[in-house]
Image (cartoon, rainbow, N blue to C red; front, top):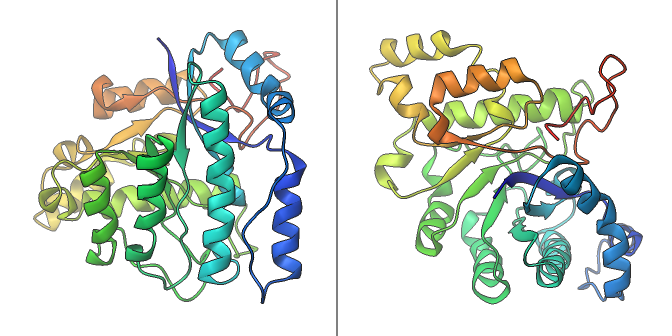
Length: 299
């Protein structure tokens, strides 16, 4: 079976964004979503995903809400919680309708300066009540502005790591929106955040404190395979564990879109630490004029 470890619901029905618009308009009075979306409408939104699966020989999706729409920087803690519940509930419905094709992965109700202790209730709901098998974790909750999010190495994150170990689920480090106009969201900010997240985790004692913690670094870890010796040298200089050993404490997904990059990643971290991923209908959904194939997908 071929499992795609990195896909998002980028084709969600317009009713979901209409709810988000109502949240924005009525920011001071957050209310839970009351979406009226039929199973037939959900099926229409998934046809493109299923066709891409068939065309690419993919059997199963690890399926999560649209990353750029998580929008953790926006609104209050309650706004984020209600929006997160709405997104996760739709993913749960998709997984119930097509359990042979989709496994649900949730977003978390992150909000600037709000402790991870406040996120774990939704994570527990998703896993225990709705059957979710993983979560996405935004390493930069405020989108690059203050209040700045602590490093993933910081003990501030420990309540989340503890709950993930208890529930025995993996988490993918995945940024959402950037408020820095100097950075392109998907090809600059995302790659930089995922690279930085990996650097902070691999330099830390997180995996000594939580040896059973399962973390996935998307997009091949940004520039890490390419800047390998820079990181090796810094680990030596600072008396840290060998970088080669540290890099094998996490998993790396292959949403990097070309054979040479994939081969380098496998050479660096080992095939057993790499997850197949395409990010279908994700950051780059374009046809390469030189090949006639998708330029931004492994499909």
